[in-house]
Length: 300
Image (cartoon, rainbow, N blue to C red; front, top):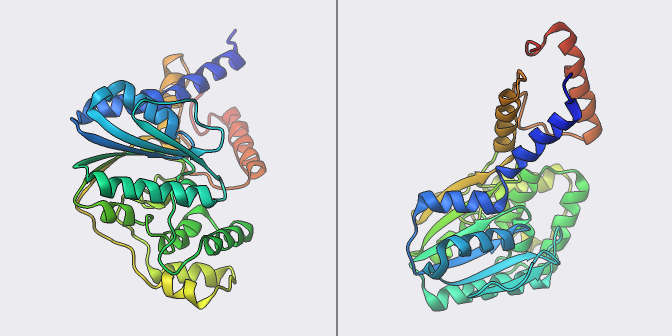
């Protein structure tokens, strides 16, 4: 008789292992074969772990680095790396100070190569308001968008147009430095212009779309904000190379593989289910009941 609970636990744990920051970063760097001197910048909740893995792999190839992560998420000193902690999910003054410091450091060192490590939480942890926009403006607009029920893509569309580093603007700022970006995605569908609001990726959103989001959710803002939103983000960049090294889709693919290896028939129903947890539970339960009729897959 099969031990279903034990086997389900095995599938889940093995799948998560495939997208852990340590293994994901090291595997990606093995293929990338970067040579120094490299400036490292990591932002997000997994920034420290991604940086530690990169430093273990690259060693002296990294000349200097900066980590910006959530309060309490640093796990100690890393040689040649400066570590900052800031607010998440709501950005704070520490976020802006750390981001500004990172930009000044890059301007000072003028590195030829930047290894940019992005993970979940990057939108709140990497930010410098556009000229004319105050930190308080960003916090206020973000809070109202969160409460309105706007999707993460809609929220990021507005964020990008109020930021000097989001929506491809970071890559444009540091040009001609070449930016090699490794991404742990927390966005369904893995849209690179939405993950951490796409600081080093060409932006597909427009000023009109950002304004439409505010109109959709009836969010009134100062004329300064409207003026800032009218400035388009770069839709083309020539100094970036990006790879997603971990995502929901990869976890699902790994789960299906491990399930098949131990004798199950497996299929991926979706990697982009976007709803309340209770609604997801009802949907998945209905699928499970269909298995009595060998749908959607044949029973082993």
